[in-house]
Length: 214
Image (cartoon, rainbow, N blue to C red; front, top):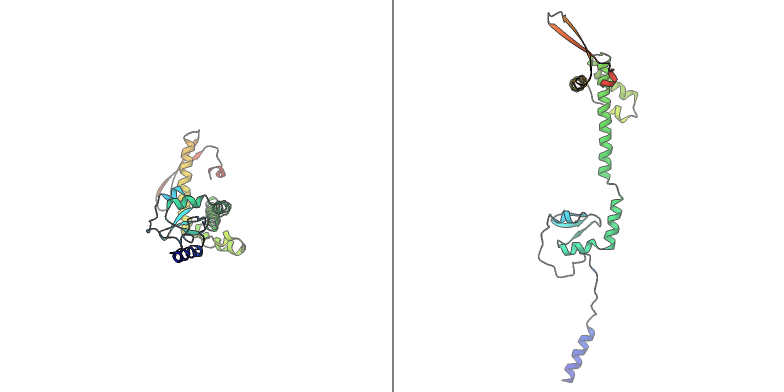
């Protein structure tokens, strides 16, 4: 009996002491633990945790850039971790590269569109033929090789004619809207062209210049 008690005491002494380690709920921290049954990712967690996203059916922390366990209690515990809080603050101060490039592309496209409209308005204001638009953008690209806007102009006579129709309709809407609120004078003239087609021209004068109408 004494031998049995001594042997039992030696076995107890050989057992390693248990240590409590704080876990933040990530998959790497729960690898050694007894795994729970596979839990599904819930969509409502995305509104509860703004740093969370779904990746291959598992929770993923975008601030810490690591996978998490699909367990709401562990996600809440991860939110309170000091390292996670610091990573969230760092992420807020960073500008995403894709959004930065998108803003640049949007600005360049807007400048190209404005340049094309300006060329069409130049053709209209000086009563020039639209066939010039087959050569004018290429001339600007040669004269301004360091300009991304000039190199990106794609506006021939077909596109210029369509833009002129759009600008004409918009200008007519603005003129009609302005004439409803101010006084104006009306000049009427009739003519017949070489094909015996009768034309009636109505000229409205209200004191506005071409630049103001544009």
